[in-house]
Length: 451
Ligand code: PHE
Image 1 (cartoon, helix red, strand yellow):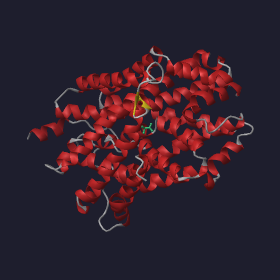
Image 2 (cartoon, helix red, strand yellow):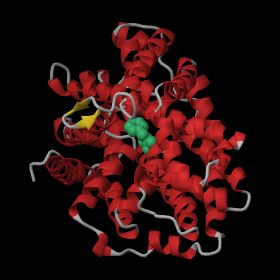
Image 3 (cartoon, rainbow, N blue to C red):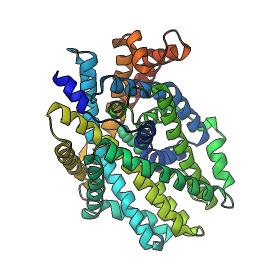
Image 4 (tube, rainbow, N blue to C red):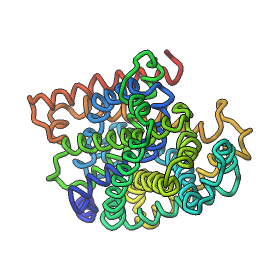
């Protein structure tokens, strides 16, 4: 009875498009525009991209469908959904890991997003392009290493995230994704065209699309797999939570394929916006995490209308980060609302504030607190490592095993909306049962240094 009431009052997406845009908004973020280009650059370009695409197809799409199905079927948060499907069993721990990962990931995600926000204002004021190209690295290092500045930007960013999530599913998350996602698409296409039409951009294009398999090694394969998880927002209950607001008439397999393809398309477009320009101006494609904050501003400096394009670019990253961050905060918010019967307002403000505070040491660890290390890593890197390399793959592994084995084939196919005896259903189940778990285990073992 009480469950019936709770279900009745629960929010849903207004439309199928609203849901798709929100899920794409979650997937497309710093992972696509900041991380994907620099890891592609570090791992040799085209060949790395091919491996990444294989990971998306074999592991990413099946696990995304698994998460959507679990959420939609139970209409519950990341923990409650496991409890409802397998009462009295310990599977709900998967959801607890998810809530923990959400805290950790958003704490440092907010820091990097704050940098992007700050760079947007520096681009607008002209301060950014006034820095001489050879001083760009010092400028960036000085900015992120300062104590107060980056924390204020992180606070501002987290404030925006909270304001949107407080408004709820339809009026907050869905509404903002409907505005931001199409804008994001247009900005990125404009930037990619700009990059590709620069004289000398062909080299960047072939760096992305003519694979050199000799550049590939085991480490690169592991990076690709780990990134597939991060980029598709898998392994921490985000897609379970978003799936729990999906009406019954939406076809989940099509949604999972659509969201994954959009995410991948955005990553490739981001590559097209960045690498042709980087090559055209003779910069280093393997510059690492500083690629978009150091190398790109130097590129914009030499480009006609550079300031205009630099504003577009940093605005793009800030918006993409925002739509992802709201999906991360929604995971603990939905859980605390059900479990402790908190209002949305209370849950969002309290959890958002705690996450902000937890991000402060991450930010400080890049400057004043850099001496302080955990297992040889600074706080920022330690949190990123624990969440991205351990908790997310673990969450993904458990979700795959849960839908692949624990639920039983009949139930799984039913909640996933796939036909029994059909080819797609069979491929899905076996990917969850064997392909995904084995590959994830190999990655985890190697990240942890066992192989
Ligand atoms: N997918 C987001 C990105 O690419 C990050 C994210 C990870 C969001 C995990 C939700 C959950 O930036």
